[in-house]
Image (cartoon, rainbow, N blue to C red; front, side, top):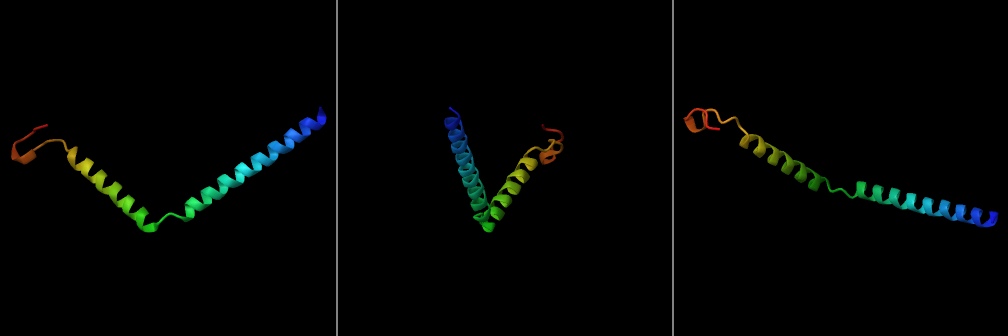
Length: 70
């Protein structure tokens, strides 16, 4: 019975080590594969959309010269 438990513990350690290594390797690979131009383009798009939202959410005062309209 003790031999089985020691064997299962050893297998669990090996599996945990492999899973940890693979996740670390994938995280490192994703971090180094980011394209700087794509990151800049995505950031610019986020800023553009935020500016559009901010412009669309004005308070409505003097919209087109007609006083408060919204």
